[in-house]
Image 1 (cartoon, rainbow, N blue to C red):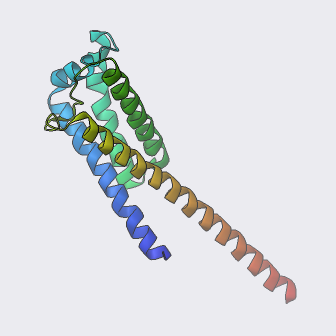
Image 2: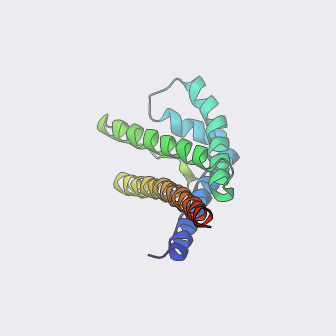
Amino acid sequence: MDLFRRNIVWRIVGLIVGGIFIYAGVIKVMDPVGFARDIDNYHMLPWALSVRLAFYLPWLEIFCGLAVLCGLFYRGGLLILTALISIFIIASIVAKARGLDITCGCFGHASKYLSFAWHLVLDFVLLAAVAFLWVSNRSERRSSSTSGALALQGSHGVNEKL
């Protein structure tokens, strides 16, 4: 795939990932008590901590989504989103293994009609998309630094021959 098409695919995936997290964060900001109940349904944290997280996590998702969209603090946003998705996947699997029937609360109550398997599939697809953005960003940085080094070598070689 040529560089132009790869950049378009990278940008589209970034828009989708950033948009998903902004949307999910806004939905949770509008109903923090409902989101606190969703967190509490996992039976892993005390209620007071669930409430604090319900007020904090949505804003973190929104800011990280904006970071991915705008490119400002891009790698930090990806790192935090990777951690959030991974923690959520682990918590969901542990809750299911404990026999808890939970709704994830990811998109408010709009996603409560999906089965556990579909939630897991969507979470792994989202994790794969974030991993793609990590790999694309690293390869782009590596190729730009390599081409810059080659350009410096080339210009140095030309000056040396003159």
